[in-house]
Length: 286
Image (cartoon, rainbow, N blue to C red; front, side):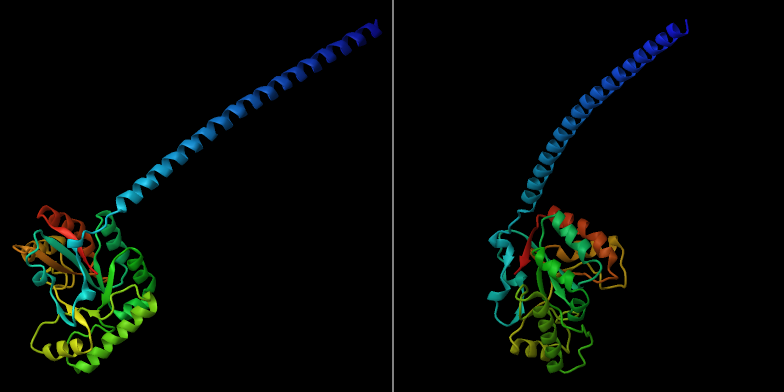
């Protein structure tokens, strides 16, 4: 009797073991099938996402393909030493052109300005202070890499013009040396904007000295007024742009890329949209 019971228990254990093995085999097979389907699905998703990325990259490159027409480029290097006035030279232009210029950089605002220019497919001219270029050489290089024009705004940015004209020219030469050391030939040599502009009764001897040294210099005939107060509101800057461009076909607009001029960055998209609404295209000094 005991032997019979032992045999039954053995058979029961064998049946249970077989059942467990069968369940395990089914589970393993099922897992393999599910994993294959999952992997296949992920491979398709990755392939599709790669196609989307490639398409978006192509679109981005196309959107930046914005070469200026010949009418929108003012060639500085063809100008003789002395004052350069595009609004006089191009007074008979059949269409309205705005040249955006930024003084006093580079600064912590430079990248933001470049981003806004890129979003609107516009190139500008940056008149750089030599000591700021020494502090932020990578930003000066970024401006060049972005296709902007870079030029001289003296090394020290002294505004009172109480030094001798020779000292002033030496300060300009020093900035030119800094620009060349950082940018090589990727800037406009012998092209300067006077700090505060070449205006006033003290300026004639300085203009003569700069011209005799072979430099071309440029002022402006429109502005956003961001130098008129330590920090002006966006509304004030917009009002100054509207007032100073009124009735003008060709405008060289003065703005500032200085660390304190945060509202200039805020106003720039609105300034661009306003100029577009008035029929201006955007040119570049080169």
